Length: 294
Image (cartoon, one colour):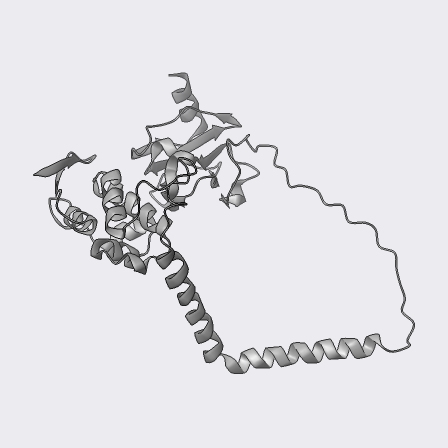
């Protein structure tokens, strides 16, 4: 018995239900008319090759956080034309995650189901080993720096103990002002991280990933009229990108419903359904506003 899934190129991918999640991913990548290399997909999704290989081999401990395991698997499945929910469900079953555990809310699917063995033990040991290796390999510079800092502190303490008069000057109070941009839209959720900040003061079009991206975020690729890549990365919920005002740009969204788009501070309607890939989206203000009027 097989599940039949059609991707956007109308290529039928057969996924036997008795396969593991890794076998489903590998078969979708290596069979059919669209055989692809992991290195190519890794660049498109901005995910390290070794993480994609770990998913295909079922070596989930190679990826430090459960949230990244499920997020990477969802994006990988969508890129290969598989059902992301089915792949994620298989991985949860293989990892022994309790699908009936308590969930604080829909946006925190993994928070109450995380595996301490991966998150706490393996990741903590990895960080300790890396820190130990760094100190061991650079012990001369490390202890030399500590000694230099100690001598500086000792010298300052000696100078402070002298009877030399100290001239004091009254300084004007420092006034802290919040950074405000006139063209910033009223975002639907708090900003997590900003990209393309060189265009922040002039951008007419602003993108923000929303919570419909789920725990994995959404992959966004933006190219100019010559096909040169301006942005290619996974935006997590709250991430903002400022589109350059000069030039013509088109975008591809791995999850079209997971992106909010503002034109001159006005939110335009969704460009596609959630968990649906959409390519060739014209990011010029006129094109986006014309879509708004339809």
